[in-house]
Length: 104
Image 1 (cartoon, rainbow, N blue to C red):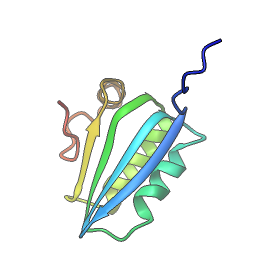
Image 2 (cartoon, rainbow, N blue to C red):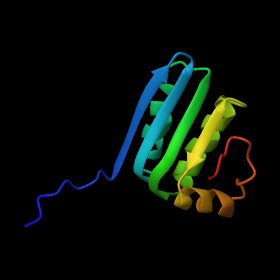
Image 3 (cartoon, helix red, strand yellow):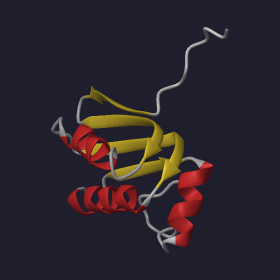
């Protein structure tokens, strides 16, 4: 019987440093969790936002919609760090050339 810790299906946490908010998202972002990701990013007033999606394993159309809403609300001040999966989904959606996307 394995008693190792199972990684969460989804989590979103935020840290604020002055006017910069860093939101770290882990796991699957889908219809059930996309709004939580968005609300976590909007919870604290900030001038700059980094959305760290490097630990995201699944990203669907609801997640894309939440991300686009965030980009519209923070034009020129949003930075998105995608996982390989997120990068692929955004490329398929035609969003790989967005200035806020900082692929590795």
